[in-house]
Length: 188
Image (cartoon, rainbow, N blue to C red; front, top):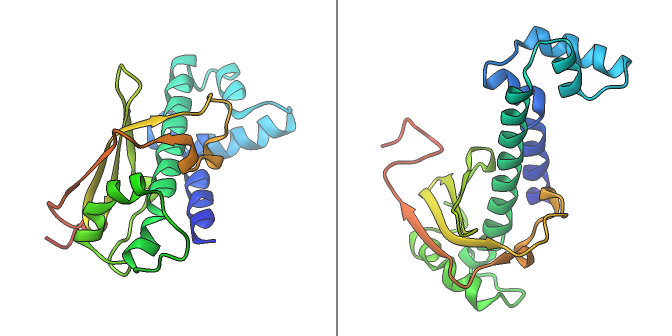
């Protein structure tokens, strides 16, 4: 249940209008007006903003790309870290994949179920030329860096529906960069 709530919160925060405001492309007032007018004209928000010359096609493409990356990184964060809680709490009710358990071993050493907190909204994703993914997730234990992830889905699946079954973990590695508490900048 908590996993689904976090995913839904990310989807709300990654709405196109919020991204456009964050990037400085439009103001909150422009967004409110555009939402109202685009709905009454039965148009998508981006189409309406371009038609009204409030936004360029380039800006829309950048915002949509950011939206897609934010949603993908949040979904991958949830898929990878949700199984970590039973491992950290030493509650192995269901057998866990040995590859995943090996990948999450640095978490088992560094923390417990009570100490692991993360915000999928703040995760970032990078794609290499060979299709491998690097996922960075700020957490209460430091920055969790997952390297060598690979999606094994055909791309037709909604980011919200991604799960561990959609990831190849064989060559994946986890590093924890413990510079300071990523979720509480007041702590060292």
